[in-house]
Length: 232
Image 1 (cartoon, one colour):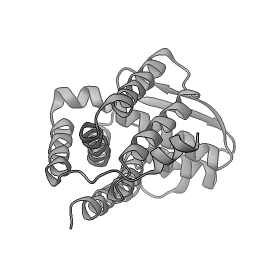
Image 2: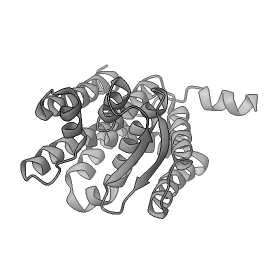
Image 3: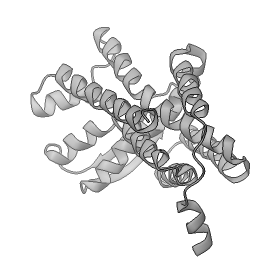
Image 4: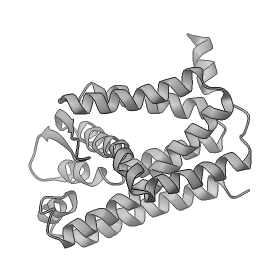
């Protein structure tokens, strides 16, 4: 067990600069290319709902379960006080969660912890899986975890490095896009109960202000990751 832990925590050889930049380019393509985005958007939903669930548990709310849907939407149900910091923080956590996970991964990769990045991602998926309450959600999380397990367990180090960087860049780039999508959806009056609208109802701070704060946080995370991974 000690040997396994040492292997997970150990630093690996730093990848070539072409791997870091190339994975960023591929991640950007996956975020902007419609067919790829429609599939990989489910990964973002996993992180989004995981953020809601994690903060709900940390603030003392009773977590009832998480559902992931085929249209890339999701729902995290928790019980507790209907107002107050706990519910506000729980609602606030969703959209920035992919960027927060990506930033944590970027920090690990900046210190050459490729295996640690992938293992932690797997553990987070396993914890979330215990809270999933519908079949599609289970399938979505299991497929995502299976892909990570395959790469982490059997792929050579260059492939593992590329996969870890690709995952991190994808989450960091995808987080702002989901907020742009939310803004467009709200403009078309198709999301009356979005996270930012619920926050506005709880705090009387306009929904657009909450959306702008989340967008600033996700773009800040991306900028910080760029300085860690791309600036010599």
